[in-house]
Length: 378
Image 1 (tube, rainbow, N blue to C red):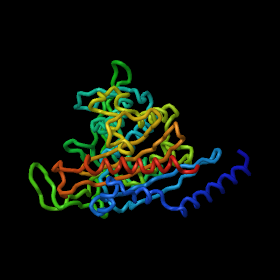
Image 2 (cartoon, rainbow, N blue to C red):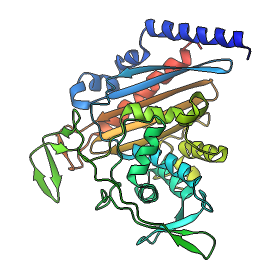
Image 3 (tube, rainbow, N blue to C red):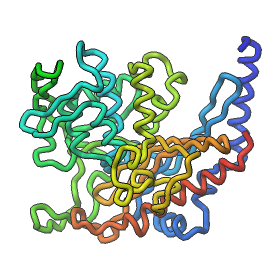
Image 4 (tube, helix red, strand yellow):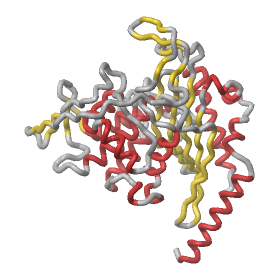
């Protein structure tokens, strides 16, 4: 593209973005829907702690423009990120592999004291296909918390604080377990444990939630304190998604050091359906890990819809961070959203309105914005 055409494209993108902003906020329009799945949440916002970021994508020749729309996004207001933290673990694991001789993503290994032998590729596929906790925790043993967090912040994915493994006893142990790594079919090496810093309690709005929680079968009638839990707000989640889907839009310092092969593998893993990873489709239906548009249905996804994403759900909080692409209608956009569904305000009682309120809200939100994108002038 010539310098003159490039300048014209940039100016055009700027004025189009301004025109879109002044023409009305499509995210607010979607949230004003009379559909009960949207309305019952919006009518009780204090209860559901919703945060949303939606990104329009426009192309002008070789240039690309993002237009972000936010609803209640605030890095100072806490929500529990659950399994969404597995996405950064997968990215950073691939980057770290590039720095170790004789080790690659198909290298086999197991964690000391664990009987499961796996590879980095298998762990990453399991993370995205069915959100496997054990696969994520194996990557944490490889990375350590401090290095993981520092690498993300270095690339501009911030604020973030990953401080514990998922769904295991002593998940916040600051010392990692050694990896037994196969350098060939019969030779192994053992990695050294990594000693991480002890996390400091977060001081954020909403860090203490509800009116009670269960611990070891006892009910404590006081708010549940998330101060030492993982912290991965909407801003950081969306920032990582943009860098992985469109790395060429960022400076070299902001990109992760992935080879073309690794990047292709990661993108494939992010959009893979459980059945494509050899999981039983009766239990792990297409939308098992896809909340937007299809989350409230067990019907197969259309073959022209690709959703590159990572969901999380725990402690009554549902989150999805997704790039949605319709190849038939030439539509694509990004959407990250979280919602808390815990009507009784008791944590760890397993009484959360995931299927009744949370997933239907996220699915309908995705549909409202998808329908808007289908009609939007590009």
